[in-house]
Amino acid sequence: MSLASFLQWLYNTPFSITMRESLWAEPIVETIHVLTLTLFLGFAVLLDMRLLGVAMKRRRMSEVLGQLNPWLFGGFAVMIVTGVLLFCADPIAFYSTTVFKVKMIMLVLAGLNVLIFNATVGRKIAEWDLSPTTPGGAKLAAVVSLVLWVFIISAGRWIAYALPPP
Amino acid sequence: MWLRSLLIAFCEWCNNSFWGHGIRNSTWLFPFVEIFHLLALGVLGGTILIVNLRLMGLRFKNEPVSELARDVRPWMLGSLAVMLLSGFLLFSTEAVKMYGNWAFRGKMLFLLAAVIYTFTVHRKVVMADQSRLAPAVRVVVAIISLLLWTGVGLGGRALGYVTTSVGSVSSLLP
Ligand code: HEM
Ligand code: HEM
Image (cartoon, rainbow over all chains, first blue to last red; front, top):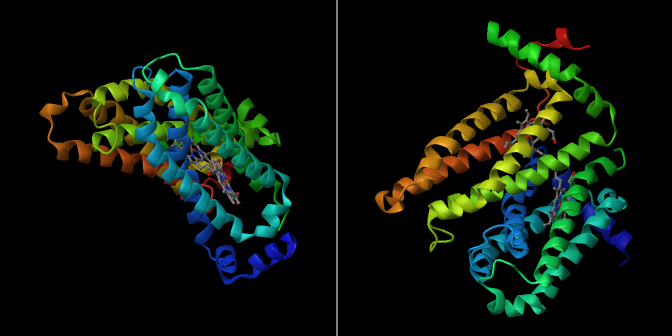
């Protein structure tokens, strides 16, 4: 099945039709998508600031990670699920915009950034756990993460402006 | 009533200000300011959440509440300032319409309540010696804070959908 026919199929599923036609479904899901930014973006920024050595300096890196991560991942899961639901409302129109595709690519990059961090500096946390000055690798991961989230959120907001007129 | 005239005059002034005009007439300035509103929403919400989760004993249990609160305080104040400023700019592009928007009014009332509560009761409990507080008190104080701020957020989301106007301001529209 080609991508175009998949999007067409998705567009015609009862679920997609409900998302599109119900008065409440999209506003509610979008509200959850936006307000979960408090949990997801808020905690991601706190974590990145600790990685930069700017906030929560006196706290162990491993503790900050251990305390924030479970909720951060919970928030991320909510972002993904509500995002996919929003996408279902009109897959063809959303996919037709460049800014949506750019957002998805940046999400993948943000995920890669976390994987690379975990496989490199993140593995040696014990060596700098209590140090207020963090290693260059940790700072780099934090900056990449912050920049990507700023652009991902900008892209998310921009989708509404890029959609073709109904 | 004098309050009503004062508010209407204020809305008109914002509407006609150079920034109100500028943002309204630009294609990219409005979304640009919206993005700041959203980014600050994340940071502000994150700092409020983490302190309240700590108050409820759900995160950072080994840290004193007051220390965690002090650590995130500059981020909270900074993002609150960005929220207020960017919100004011967004409001100025359609201030006369917002005057009668019930969701906007609700948002402002919740915001006022949330700010006052955060800097009085909430702050006092956060900074207090926790051994002298019953756990139930901390949980209730945290839940009230979360409810007030959720009210602000929901009001922000809802105001775009509201098309009916409570007060009649049609005479003010250009
Ligand atoms: C952590 C990941 C994500 C973040 C931070 C994020 C952020 C955002 C933001 C800030 C908005 C603007 C909402 C508004 O102001 O009304 C948005 C809209 C949107 N997002 Fe996401 N998003 C994420 C994941 C996703 C995913 C995985 C998808 C789909 C597969 C998705 C699909 C959408 C769609 C379709 C909209 C546009 C809704 C509309 O304007 O009608 N998002 N996103
Ligand atoms: C800390 C306080 C605030 C919070 C938590 C907050 C929250 C929000 C949220 C969640 C939205 C929806 C954004 C979207 O879906 O894209 C919003 C939009 C809006 N807010 Fe605020 N806000 C705050 C302060 C203010 C203030 C002080 C004003 C005005 C004086 C204001 C004016 C607006 C306007 C006009 C919108 C609609 C524009 C839009 O949809 O982007 N906000 N706010």
